[in-house]
Image 1 (cartoon, helix red, strand yellow):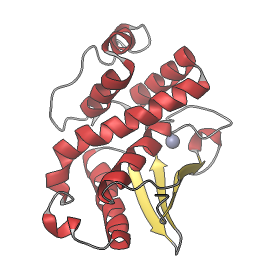
Image 2: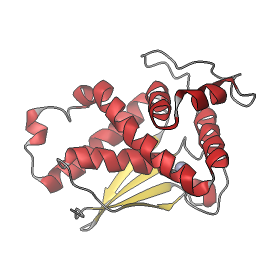
Image 3: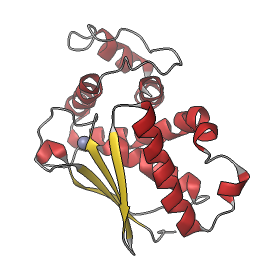
Length: 196
Ligand SMILES: [Zn+2]
């Protein structure tokens, strides 16, 4: 998953900036190149949250947020290639389900992949209108403090995953709670009704 995130960041922000991050004094002790394709857990939460902080301080909060969202969307494309067939969202039986079933089932399958293949802990809840994506252990804001929700990368991943699951529809997706601002989990609220 670390590899997927780095490839996505490279696509959106550029190889030069990522190399600067990888070789910078804050991060080079952890990792100095993009890790290979395997399931080793060598990409730490601390490392990811520091990268997000570096992007925000280099580009400012507004542009940094946009880049993080777009990087999250790119993460999904790389992630789908690696994890889609494994978790069952790429097969025809899934694609033929009605939209509301697909959203709930898709969210649970994606949460299962994060719980199984990373140390991130995700829980999915829902009511009539919303799906709530709770990250109880969040790598994106790990040990950060902020007065605003800060896990834009996760919002971007969910935007792109639901766009894909729904066959091209956009949804209102917003992070309402964030551990970095003192909440007990990072909660992303997904409106089940598509925008378009
Ligand atoms: Zn978070």
